[in-house]
Image 1 (cartoon, one colour):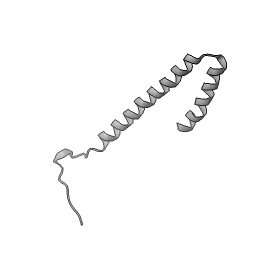
Image 2 (cartoon, one colour):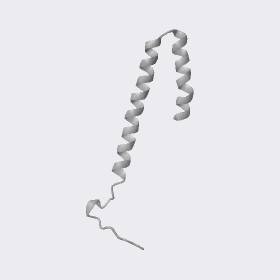
Image 3 (cartoon, one colour):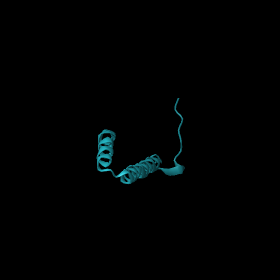
Amino acid sequence: MGRFGAVFGPWLGGQLLATGSTTAGFTAFALAGVFSLVFVSLTGLRRVQSAVPQGGPQQQLTVTG
């Protein structure tokens, strides 16, 4: 996904600059940032939920040493 953005971002910027639409460029890149924020936040929530042990808080911890 990062490589796609590295190629697509400058291309989109160039296309918008060539057509002369400066306000559409700001909107397009702002929307990309908002979508990234949402997807990264959802990924973080998923990892937090999967990190909870299956037994829940009642599960006893054992110390090995």
